[in-house]
Image: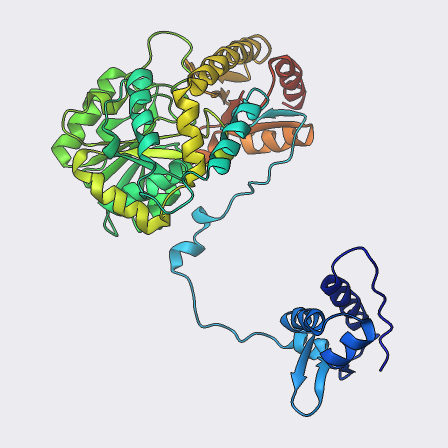
Length: 468
């Protein structure tokens, strides 16, 4: 048969032969059962090497379009009968927990609303992309950190991070007690791996941070929501059987209040009495606007019961996917082994670039710059709410972070209904009710001010006011 293939000067010969045959087979110009020329014959016709034709045939065979049959040659496969063959139904089923509604994957593909008050999103326009790109390029050019390494993380980054935590947060922890993780979520996972048995009870704030709740639930733990009030977690309502307590003491998520000193003391004493661990999520405490920085629980823990979690998702970029877990010395080796089991280690070139970024002062400068920006947005947001939403929304006092919450007054519609209306009007805002654990959360909004510029806040709140 004569295929009439036309080879030009653009593109590789293998690619051209493959593409033209692929098109003709796909459009049935070469129907099923057609016998193609031998590789030697076609190579002679096209004045190319036989290896070129063999390579093109191999690609077609890999895609299930042709096959060789003894005594016949290379034939085109009947793609329709091949495609219509239904795969056998598998008898395999996941554990029941993976069908639970609580572990459903949320819609993470965010659109870009006109006014974005979505919580948990840091400012992106101020991020030093040029310097970060240069640091990454340097690491890739020098080919540092490209092999398997200590699963706990780069020794340099852990050393730099330990010094940074002492200065910025008063956290005193040795580098060997730190594990570099792929975000805070993996830190929760490692904490659960090394301390929990299936069926153990974990207490979490209610309303609280759902990703942490999901992580403990997936490990087979019984997760119990514990109420919060204006002083933070209500320690007196902790279940006596809890083996672990998860808290956000510096800036409760989602409501925003810090845990009082008396509650902090009570929580540490409770953990000592009940032989329990505390997982402290210190997710955005760098951005405190007034007063001295709150001392983390880890810094006042005299018994080694606090596991300290942080990440760079709120300070730098969510896509960076670098976090850390600080553990008591007795858990250091177990955490290192758990990290090895999880993924063999976080990306080496990211760790190396981050270590340099912290050493040269880039992280500290970025935090100072963003703290000033977030403080302006926070004051503008709360001032506007008090002036234009009186009788509708009651802001909850907060002194830092990248979000604040406000409760809807009694008689207002559900926050989910209002948030849907707002989104239709181009305003994205978080709802408090969705963060409930054992019960629906309070009725209100969570306003993130990381992703929205100061000058956009008044117009965004005006649009929200019209909806409400």
